[in-house]
Image (cartoon, helix red, strand yellow):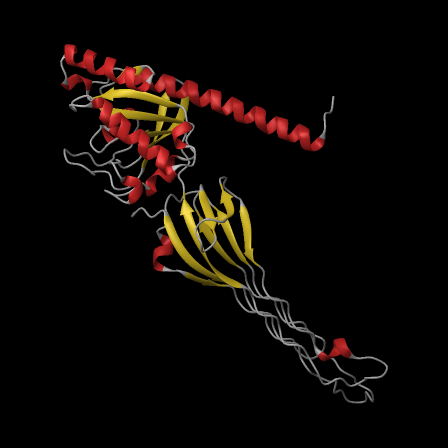
Length: 349
């Protein structure tokens, strides 16, 4: 299935049905009077978060979604049938934005969440609604109200606990393939990964989701390479693992490029907890590896892990550190949620 994480769609709620002008015509009934029914309400437009989807590819082939119109009212005081709603089904992690691509309408992060985007137009009144003592035979009815419409953007941000970042060919896909059952494309040329990949890491009796993001190059925030649009998929990650290729001549420069791109992107990515690791350590001799590790630690001000996805060296320790940071972040989020509930509802023994 092709990966698509952005889509622009047009949605329109259903128009309301028109009211009916009708009079009762029945044998042996001298004074029938008006009996025109009201029109039915137009259908609403909903967006629903469902399980089993991981891309917005469905919205590449259909961009217009219109709810059904309400039926017109009928005689004998019969109200028209309401129009059917239209439901846009999206994967977990989908943001709904206005046409300006900045104003967030809703953020769907759990299966079953539903958001009403547009409400269908109300049906018009039939002539029975206008009868009175001074107007016993009204010959007027209201048309239904039109349904609202607009263009919106759907933007998918994958739900992952940890994310891998680095330059192209830093070993991110190889690392993902070695610690999960995911099978990303792996080759010896840049930009092998063209879209994010997800995998589930199983460590002892614990699990977490790891995301592999296509490589960044200098100037990615200005559109260089494949740009930084895929960085949105690590906005929800609790920890980032920054992989630096140990076979590169200047590992400090490689580290600097990625840090500057994360800072230029914004959204707090440069403030997220980060684990720094030298990858492909099996391809470098011990002396060179020690020298590069020392230089990278001095430049970053943090510990530098040594990992090799090919041999498995250091990967378990790296995963353990990721899980530790994830657990700490989850505990902090739970504490904030409890504090917010206490603030809204007040303290209770």
